[in-house]
Image (cartoon, rainbow, N blue to C red; front, side, top):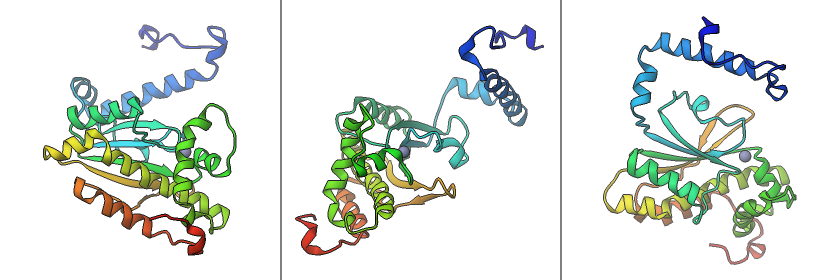
Length: 241
Ligand SMILES: [Zn+2]
């Protein structure tokens, strides 16, 4: 049967660069067969249309796959990932993805999902130089600077975890303040923005309690979320809100 299939097996003689990839193709065939057996019509249904209820904005880190973590099948979550799960106001890639998700797919929930142990957050916190991404991670350093009064008094390891959380909270705010979400709320479209953080060590998601579902609550929810992180010496906290 396999010889009649269009996928010619990749071997080391066919392509030296494809070493090991045959395992992935074989695994894919088994997955497709098992999925079809479990749910006949699964692929034909999905091929016609996707109608996910959720959009996931997460880190590119290979250990944080949206579908697996949440037990969702293909077609159930629309995904955008980049280094350190950032939503930058001028990033047309992220904004276009959010716009498509909200205006065409009509997702009901957008989750910004950070994770503890994020190399991008760590590099930003410690000022490590890793290359071109330094410029991208400047946005995380901006978050750190803005909230240094709530960060600098903590032990280093805790600083990293808290910055992961604060970065998520900031990005939730950025999604909520985007023209796409502001317009959606203005026309009465129900869409909620949430902030979660994932633990690599236990595989668990934590809700940061920063859900926003109307333009009137953005500032309050944001301020309440930040107040959960106590300041150190108030004299050293600068002029933060
Ligand atoms: Zn990461």
